[in-house]
Amino acid sequence: MRKHFSVFLIFSFLTLCSLRAFTSPQSPDYIIFKGDTVATYTLLLELYFQQQDKAEQGKLFGLSFRDGASFNCWRGYQAIYEVDNDSLFLVDIIYCGERRNGKINKAASVEKMKKIFNEKFFNDRVYINWFSGDIKFPLTNKVLRWDGVFYTIYEREKVISISGGRVLAMKDVENYIDDPGRINRKDKNKISDTLFKKLKKAKWKNNADFDCSEKYMVTIDGNGNVSKVRMLYAEDEIEKYYEKDEYNFCISKVYNALKTLKFDIIKDAGKPISEDIYIEIWVEDNGKLENWTR
Image (cartoon, rainbow, N blue to C red; front, side):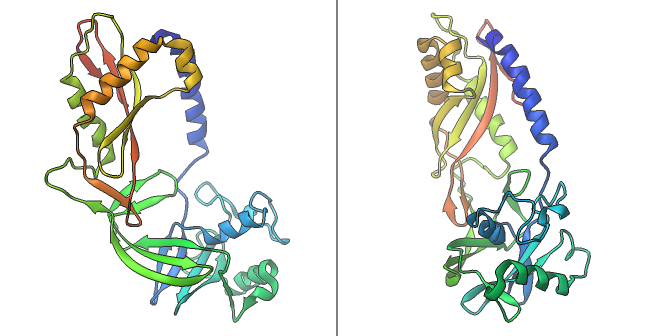
């Protein structure tokens, strides 16, 4: 089966390399909360631009925001928000890295906000009435998950629930449930090894001579259970290169081998999440399994 995918795999690899060249860790926005200024990865100002259908324009209200863009700050700016009593405000729009360098050009920030928000800019700030949802920021530096570019989940977070800019509730959340009876899941890179050890115990040699050497995505659901297994290809590719019986056999084989595993639960902003784990296996003619996961 795998030889049919050789050209497709080479193309996918080159495409992935090209995408990685254009992605890099992104700078966060900031939020002032009870006198402290902390990083937040909820981009409220960018959300406003998207709602105005101007997110992809190089110039916004006559301001060349994207001119200040860089590999680690594609927005071309950073925003600073503030929770004041029961309301959420935008208090600054700064150049990338400006706060980190120790000095904010307040006059330039005010000019930006005036040109963008006009009469909505009042008392040196803007009421964020365009946002409803949760914003969060870390209460610890222990990272549970990071997408390699921007989005981050910390073990402990402050979650603030907002409705039209009004603060409804605040809570501190724990995003990891460490259960001694379950498998540790903190290091995502080690989970595929755990899956392989379990798969290795299964019998892969079969009378139909089905070859399950392939790339798989294993879904661990919000309860920490293995809930789904799929191959890492589109449906039309699977239909083209696989016999239905062989495909069903391999998916069932992998799922049945893993379904008894129980993992610790991971949350995001206090809510359980599922995640996909990549694994690649190679089955020798004698049924021996090799771990080809990279």
